[in-house]
Amino acid sequence: MFERFTKGAREAVVGAQEEARGLGHRHIGTEHVLVALAGVDDATARTLRGHGLDAAVLRARLASRGGSGEELDPEALRAIGIDLDAVRRATEENFGEGALDAPRGEPDRPKRHIRFTKEAKKSLELSLRRALDLKHHHIGTGHILLGVLQDDSSAVRLAWSAGADVGELRADVTRLLTSEAA
Image 1 (cartoon, rainbow, N blue to C red):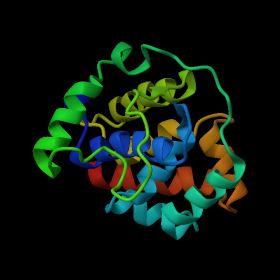
Image 2 (cartoon, one colour):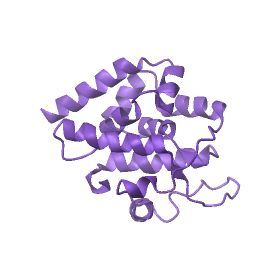
Image 3 (spheres, rainbow, N blue to C red):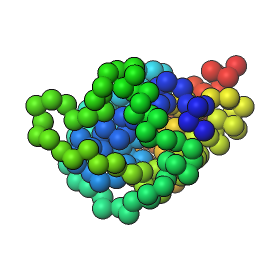
Image 4 (cartoon, one colour):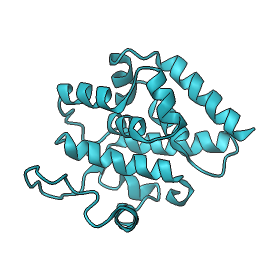
């Protein structure tokens, strides 16, 4: 499935891990994916910003909440065909060795693997469904955003707490994706 991800979608998945690590969280949840999506330079991120959701605001709100203590799903990404070792290799090929490590000047943290929650895994699966529904042969950041904005996910709660109307946001992203398909 990962081969279907656009460059921006891959950046968002890798960025979610960086967000979780930077916040000292022991899991990657839909809230981390939402922050990472807001940090990608594309139409989806511009749509998020249009709804008052930029990466810095979301990150600050998430940091003020602290970790959620959710149980980890040890095989979440592997189960949907995403190999984080391959993501790391590709990222380091494009951005240099250690690109996913903590920024210089920060205390050394163990480079342990951070796992996706079941909710985050489900959201990535839903992103594939959204792409297929639109007859897209790729999974982009908009598809991932629709996946994380399902039900009462952590990302939905974070977006609401930042003042966004999640229903309007979903509608705008769906329009964006539909116009890309035309």
